[in-house]
Image 1 (cartoon, rainbow, N blue to C red):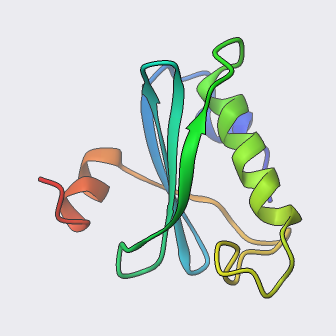
Image 2 (image 1 turned 90 degrees about the vertical axis):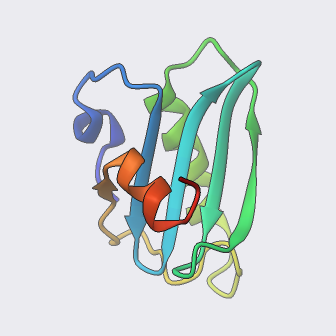
Length: 103
C-alpha cells in the first residue's frame, strides 16, 4: 500500500475518507484521539474505534490503522479484499458523508 504521509502531503485537515478495494476507511479527529471506521461498499460499519494516541498525526494514526487491517488474516471480514498491493484512493470527506447518507 502507498505511503500515507505522501498521499496526505502534509495537509492538516481533521478528517479523511479512503477506498481500498471493497472497503472504506474513514478517520477524523475526535475528543481524546482519532475516531476511525471501516465500512463495506454499502456503507455498513464493519469495524472501528478510537486511536487514542494524540502524540501522532492523523496521517500516522491512519497508517497504523491500515497496518492493523493488513495484518489481519485474508479471510477477515474487516480486511475484505485489501492486500498490500491495494491502492488507497482518497475520497473527499464531505462527499463520502453524503454518499453514506450522513448529511
